[in-house]
Amino acid sequence: MKQARVIVFIIWGVLCFSLLGYAVVLSSMTFLPTKGGANSASLVVALGAGSATMLSFLLRLLFLGGFTTSTLNLEDPQQRGRFVAGNIVVFALSEGVGVLGFVNGILSNGRGEAWLPYLGLAFILMLVHIPLPARFKPAA
Image (cartoon, rainbow, N blue to C red; front, side, top):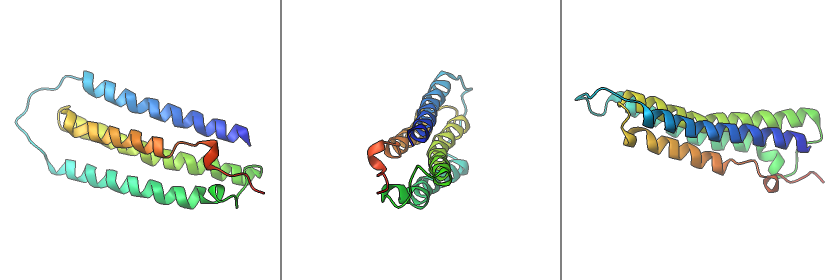
């Protein structure tokens, strides 16, 4: 059903826009100068971002794989709910990488090299997981 695809696409757009908001906030914040360098929290953030990235692809395959192979149909209300929920989970994991970058940016006093790669990866993940209609085949 077209309505479910529109809802998913709107959610995708809002989450992509929020990544831009994270970048604006971090680039406009003023931090006090400190002597501290990279800490162990940055390593934990990097591991979390890597895990969320891999998990987004795995859950996309599990939740949405039936829609790409046309074994699941958007006309069924239960499967439509699975489509919307599956996309939201995948988008949330992709957005989570950006949130981890935001946290890492705050912990590292706003240094661009601490948060920009995470926000860039999150935006790339959102582009990879974009809900294009051509990606989902209608059931025969």
